[in-house]
Picture 1 (spheres, one colour):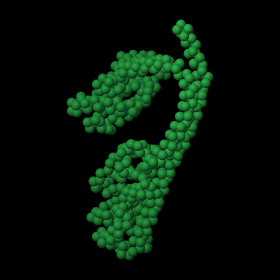
Picture 2: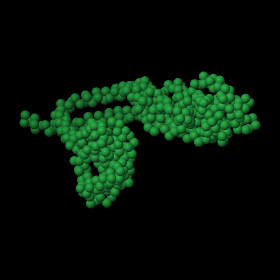
Picture 3: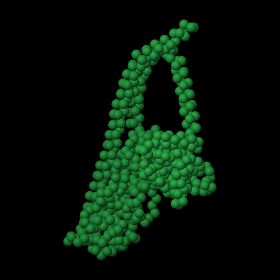
Picture 4: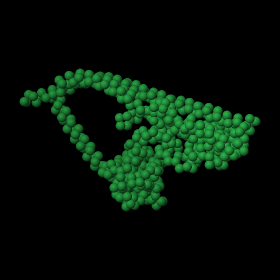
Amino acid sequence: MAYYKAMTPSLSKNLKQVYRRFFWPIALIGALALVLHLTQTLRLTQEMFRLELDTLSQQVHHRFADAQKTLQGRYVQIARIYQNQPAFVKRMQAGDPQSLYKYLKADYQDFREQMPQLYVMHLVDSHNVTQLRLHKPESWGDDLTEIRPMMAAANRTGDVQKGFEAGKNGITYRVSVPLKTSSGQALGVLEFGIEPDYFTADLSEQYDVATRLLVPEAKLTHLTREVRFDSVGRYRAMTADPEFDLLQVGHEAQARLLHHHGQTYAFVSDLTLPDYRGQGVVKVQVLKDITERYDRHYHQLFVQVGLNVLALILMLTLLHILLRRFQLASIRSERQLRHLRSQNRAFQESNERDELTGCFNRRFFNKCLRRLLARGGPDASHALLFFDIDHFKRINDQKGHLVGDDILIELAQFVNRHVRDHDALIRWGGEEFALVLEEVDLTEATDVAEKLRQGVKARTWPGEVEMTLSFGVTLLKPDDDLETLQARVDRLLYTAKDSGRDTVCSG
């Protein structure tokens, strides 16, 4: 036994030398080869699916361009036919909507049967005053100069105008064709309007995709009929397939692959359809289910990688078996050490975290501020923000403390999402929080507070609560200690409260 104990250090030393000379170099070379192979394969895979996204985007663009060109040619031709019919010209010049309606009603019905998405067939005189809406014949005589600039432009320039534009009854793709008599006298404009779902239905049929058509809310201010559209940020969804609700795709999402419940979709959102001036109005988003091809490709990839990994494992295992029995003791010791370290980190973490929100607590706050004050110098610039929820007691009284707790938890998550990873959010107590920002000046810190204030005010919180925050913002000074720093930022927060709340006070 004494001899064995004497030999143990030597055996351990030899074991390390064998690993260093043979096992680890072989393992490293094999692992590097696998990593390089996997990296190259993944890069090629990403490039393949990126090209698929580009191809889908190009298909969508070309299809929309062809559809618009077809619509323009069709309806310009119809308008030219009408302006060469004396009976039509006579009725336009007379300005008699009832006579015009009788004359055009059968044609309008035929057009609708041929193309159900044709909704608007609208005649205005040369002064932009409605002569007849075939889709709404009881409404005429209104001046559209202000609310329908596309139609006014067609009258003013004498050129065909095309594009998406909202009117009183909805947003449609419109082709506005100026009308003239054979002598060149301006008669007005004949406008055709096609429902947006014409384009999305065409895309769905042609490329087997799901589509969503979004319009900014600001473009729908002239609507006179009550129409309910789902909100998507600052947009409204004029048409949308159900897949978009399941995937919860935002209006600003970029082209990428989306994964949901085992399904994979190619998503593109770079098609913006213009108004008559060429300015983007309507955003089109497209989803294409590529689950089968995606799964098949990655299944093949995983099989290939798995076989390579298995070969390397078998080779290393044969070498490792010779050394394993000598290594068990050190492995057990290392595991125990890691476990102790993990427990120590977990204990330290829990000791510096707020139990409800997961934010840091005052213990961490004091440690963090002492560190920053200790290393402060003439070029150091760190900021401290104090903020709390305005009228939080009223929220607790009206909604209950459970809702109040949910609000505090969600507020902490919201703030952490909108600051940098190394910024420290501290729950000071109750509804009061502190935020430590390193390496910022006062303007930057104030901007952060202002963006947080606006973001909180703009959304609805648990229990359908709408709330605001008040902020005090200051920089750490070289002669500060914890007491002077806290006193100064407290005064700024109270000033924000005294100024009416929902404000940022810095100094």
